[in-house]
Each structure stands twice: as C-alpha cells, then as structure tokens.
Length: 129
Image 1 (cartoon, helix red, strand yellow):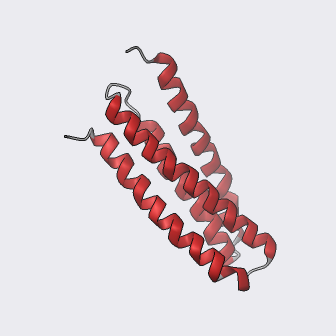
Image 2 (cartoon, rainbow, N blue to C red):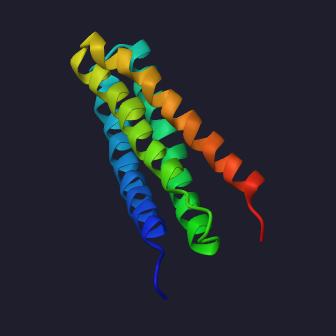
C-alpha cells in the first residue's frame, strides 16, 4: 500500500509528537514537580495536554487523508505541526527558562491549532463522495 504524501508526513509528525509527549510528560511528572512552582507546573501540563491532543489530531489527519485522498488536508496538518510547536513547546520553554517572550508566543500557536480544526471541518462540509 502506498501512502498519500500528506498522510505519510502527518502520521510521521503525529507519532513523533506522541513519543515526545510521553518523554516530556514523564520529565514534568518526575523532575519538574520538584523544581518549579505549582503555577508553572500547571503551564507545563497544559502544554503536554495540547501536545497530545494535536499529536492525535495529526494521526487522525493522516488516516483521513489516506482514506479520502482528494480532501487535500495539508493546511490542517501544517497548522497542527506549527501550532503545536508554538503552543506546547513554548509552554515548555517558558517553564524551563522563565523567559516571558516564550509565554507571549503561545497564543499564536493556539490560533494556528484552532485554524487547523476549522479548516479540517470546512473540508468535510465541501466534501462530495
């Protein structure tokens, strides 16, 4: 079976982000809990939660793209990848460094994640089997 190029890329990012989510989550649960204040730990956990949601979203996009190859889900995939990096990874960087600029970038990631879901929804409203 040959995977659609966007399905393949989306699945690669999804599985990579899932693996990283496990590692970062374990780091937060076992190392950070003793190093940072409770409010920063909540920020880290929010990053982890959105990291996992959107890693699973990438897997979902990959599966949907493979099944419905004419949907062209590349924008949703890119927004999930970039949005996860800007949202979750900047949560992590802020907690680890305390540098406020990382926290200020997080909302941009949230906007991209939201747009990824809206675009995905729009593709299904336009879809004709």
